Amino acid sequence: MPESGWPAPTAPGPVDAQVVVPGSKSQTNRALLLAGLADGPSTLDGVLRSRDTTLMRAGLTALGVGFQELGPGRLRILPPDRLHHAEKPVDCGLAGTVMRFLPAAAATAPGPTRFIGDPAASARPVAPVLEGLSQLGVRVEGDRLPFTVDPPARLGGPRATIDSSGSSQFVSALLLSGARYPHGIDLRHRGPAVPSAPHIAMTCTMLAERGVEVSTPDPDHWRVRPGPIAAMDATVEPDLTNAAVFLAAAMVTAGRLTIPGWPERTTQPGVDFLDVARSMGARVARSGDRLSVIGGEQLHGAEVDLHEASELTPVVAALAALAHGRTRISGVAHIRGHETDRLAALEEQLSAVGAEVRQTPDGLVVEGRGPAALHGALLRCHDDHRMAHAAALIGLVVSGVVLDDVSCTSKTMPDFPQMWSDMIGPR
Image: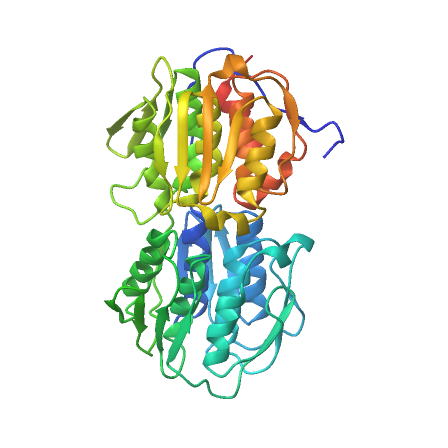
């Protein structure tokens, strides 16, 4: 990326476009892992190709899983009878699903596996997963990246208790591999409320679809019985969280944006963006599997609780800066431990373009004064794809916004810069 950065394109008028959104990262990485642990080959369609999913595939390959490319977005996954330990360190990059899900899978493969990541990855919490594995008898060296897991010849268990208030991925990690543990897993959460609960529902649904017996006998208590994970051909849904930034483009330009392939029912928390859009003055329309957001004459502030869908926070914060009136975003204290401290980064970068924003213990308050009150600036993405989405959205209606490194969008949407420009059309 050149030192001058990426000048965010400004829309010449209302956006009127259709955008085909790539597959869900959350579903892709869960489906890849479950296929790698299954009792036979599986074929997946709609697979997202991005940095996070590439890292997941590389990690699974290191543990003994085979892959065949069948065409764009189409993969055949060939699981071994049993995973083996990785001979070389597994690179997790900055991917939460990789650094949390793969160690729990490696617990089924006797022998030490080392996990490493990007320099900033050590700031991402992973200790609760490692604590849960320790309670099952896994020897663990380190409580953050880099770390090593060294399972015994046969795991103990099934009971484990962890604090998952930092991420729902801690729960999902242990549930996804739990059926391959000799005693299954009986997992409890102890601590403040678990964020992004729909992601746990996604995990449980995908397990059940593959014949795994999973139950929630009490709140914050999950059981997975030991047994096979059935091979299953599946199609990955479009990523509804990635869709949010494109739908938001219609909101800030008083335009219309349509996403084809929108699922009728979904466990993706990104669907919550539709409620946010309505609360800020947009309309939502559906025709078959085509979902459209139509922007109103003026965005207005709103009270938004994103505890269940915290990945939406950067885009919603950018909308708030472009709206008129106060927006309070709550329930997202845990995103201080995401790819970067997102609350601090949003306060810093929105302030850089002239927005009035402050952190609260569990979120942000933004005093919106409309796009005319903002100005251009060089915005730091902090190696965080969601921060880049937020900056690009502001640049759509505020001239002179430059992103220091748009390439970080490759984490979940490698073609984002071109997709964004195509959405705007000729200028």
